[in-house]
Length: 348
Figure 1 (tube, rainbow, N blue to C red):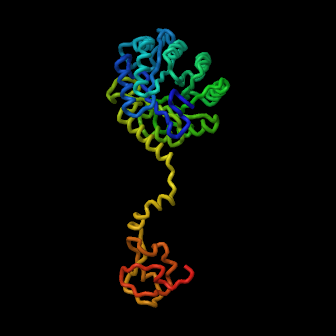
Figure 2: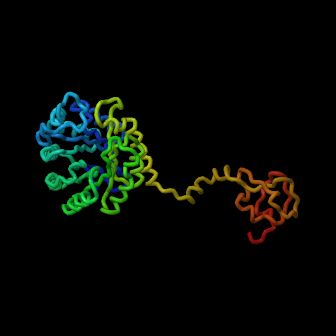
Figure 3: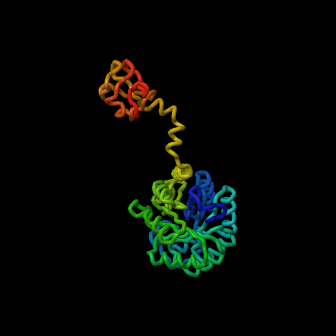
């Protein structure tokens, strides 16, 4: 599956998405700062949300939890934080100049149409729109791939949407997520990653709200093709998503961990080849058989006659049982190495 210039079919292609959402609080300058922060700290993509108040809301829409004191309603908040189409074009251009895939979740058909004109290369669908058939049909008609969140949906709703998109021959990634902010470990649902893959045979990702790097690393090791995390410029920032977000430093740590593990996964180790390459180290660190005391020729060797010391110059310590009870052919002083040539042993 290809998202813009980003191929998600190989281990090395885990798409790391820095989710800004509405953390810019309507400041275009802050939105641009988030782009630089995401690019500087290892993300492959940056994602915003596109809200058009008049298309999405009405003045009757109340806050679930009132966060912003200057806004009387959610409609007021969406209106205050809107960007124009020209501003979205500027943000997309900046993201691409920094090597990022530019994404934004549309929350209305009008927002989707605007983002289509802006030129997004894929559609990120929020959990609340997984059954929004009119918008999904429009988005499918563009031929662009989907990144589909499932945080609030039961299995039947997810299955219906998967069937709908497959029927339209749309490429998509299904994201496991939980709409608890911040999300505790017992609700992350890493088990769903393999269940989605097994049920539907499609690429799978994790949209994480845990404010940890651990969930994303775990998802990657389970084969997630994409990991999305909220980011914040500071844990002291204002806004509802800050407690669910990674700092820039934490984003960088997550990115470097995933890339480190990608390299490890791409380079399987052959233990025989590795041992051959470490032959000098094996000689220095492994133990060989030596005389534990002075021994005379003709002695029938007992376990007490042997010691095991570095370096492994003669017979490896692991062979000791093969010489117990055998006759020593040569005199040995304490710490002298014992080799096969010192043993009267015809069938070693």
